[in-house]
Image: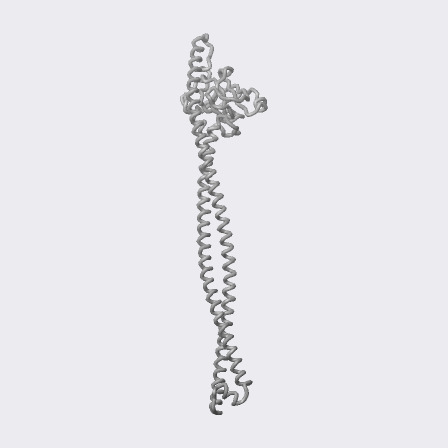
Length: 344
């Protein structure tokens, strides 16, 4: 009699190979273990996903910071260009005013007497010298004006180039800010998802611990039931007339390895718990513990893998009861004679 097989089978998920899971039942511990394993895998995947998202967010923030630095540098260049343009504009305006004034004095101011008055000349020679100086001053101011105009033209090109760079940079900053916001939202969502998975895993693992404790209790109860069944079978063998076989004669277990046994399989659907204390469910079968020890793994053709986890007053000898999820399923199965495989 292999008592640890009950707990092992329930927790290793052996009940559900080829069968449909149901709520509760002997497969609950197996389902909880599978769910815990799934959640561990989901947690690992979510953690990697969060790591990648946070890395992308960090890169986006570094890129945005670089764009902000470039924007600050460009702002300095734009201010410098505006200041220089204002200086050139004022210089050009002053040159134009001086040129206009000199030309007016030269060509409109009148004869030598007027020129003498303008320049304080006391003779024609002095006036002529003054006119020559006026012409040179006019030429110099025209040259300065041309230089100022060239500088203004150059600064205009610089400002247009700066405006183009500003537009591109502002667009890049807007895109970078939007990307940073999207990534921040994604990271927050992934953090929440990871927290949910971890919470679910914690709940599942606590549930699994409770189920394991329940399985251990069921194992102890099964040992008691099997011992009682063996004692009853011994008493029956003692009381039986010579030549009449007993249940233990019918299905004496082999030392090791799978064996087969012909049994009558009866289907039923009832809620509640088994004699071992486990809840009923798909994969739970009731047996005569003196024929098939409780905790034994079996395979029933047409039903699937199961564990002997219950007994019943009507289950005697080579008879097993199969739990079905609905009354309709139980009626559809009815009572069949099948050859089961017992794994021990």
